[in-house]
Each structure stands twice: as C-alpha cells, then as structure tokens.
Length: 115
Length: 115
Image 1 (cartoon, each protein chain N blue to C red):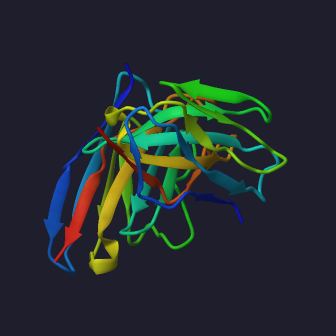
Image 2: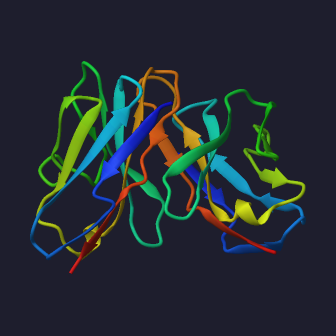
C-alpha cells in the first residue's frame, strides 16, 4: 500500500546547526504522488510547509527545502541553520492526486532546537 | 485568508457516551472536507472524505455508524463519535479545500479524552 516513513524523533539540535529529517515513501496506487511537508507548532493546527508535485524538483519555504527524488523514493527535509522557533512536529506526507486529495502521513518527527 | 476553525479544542467524555465536534471553513467555499484522527503514538489516519456532489466516503476501519458526519454545506461540517471508548481518544483534525487542485487547510483539531 501507500506509506510514509520518516526519522523517528525527538531530534534535538542546537540553534544555528544544520538539520535533516529523512522521509521515504512507498506509492503503489499512484505513480507520481504529490509530496508534502507539514508542520505543527505547539497548540496549533497542521500547516503546509512546502510541497513538490514534480519528480526532480525542489521545494523551499522559511529556509527549509526538500527534493522529490523518485529514484530513491525520498523527500528529505533540510535546513542549513535552524532557529529556536523551528521547534515543532514535522510530518512528511504523500498526496493522492485527483478528486480524493487523500493524504498519507508519516508518524511525525519532533524537532527540539536548543538555544 | 483561508482558515479552518474547529471546536471544541478539547473535550472529555465518559466511556460509552457520544461527542460531537464541528469544523468551519472561513474565507473560502469548501468543496472537499476531510476528517483525520491521530491516536496516541500514531500518525493521522483519514476517517472520511466529503466532496461536493458526492456521497461521504469512509475509509476502511471507520464507519458512518460510528462516525456520522453531517454538513448543510461543506463550509460547515460536524462529526460525532458515537459510543466513544478508550481507543477513540486522540486528536481529530478537519481539513478543507476550495478546489480540486488546491491544498487542504487544517484546523487546530479537537482533542478527545475518554474516561
């Protein structure tokens, strides 16, 4: 079936350090799924961080970036220099396009940035 | 901008009783509404998807008899957890989108505790 696997948290890094949260996916019901990263800050709902719908393309937002790699079925999230305000739970998701718009989420990775 | 409100934010119900939660899209006309549940230690699972001019579609493991959904229009949706038990606790997230190709906007969720 369709599934998403991501880095198991919590991940703790110091402010200004680099970050990578791994995400790999398995898509059996669709050849080219849309790929997303969502973020959930404490007390808030899920927010879309970035998405990429074309294999080989890179998405970026707020200093974060992720590249859609169909060969390795990966969509790792990276940031060169994290800030304390980046502390949140990050979810990688696979989107089934078309009328359903169904999203398959990973388990989420808690990021704790220490000052 | 597009916002989705959910209420209540948090609720407690006794085992065997029912609990209704609501979702409202503001700033756009919703054409699809999705309800997800995140159980403890799990990721978000799709419960059901409502699309304009189509019947509500429930995912495997979720039924209309257990999670009835109603909406006079898709910008206002409510879901009830009937006969709630411990396994129903978790965060219930509502997402809505305006067009088939747009992204879902999510609310902050309703956290259900069952005692």
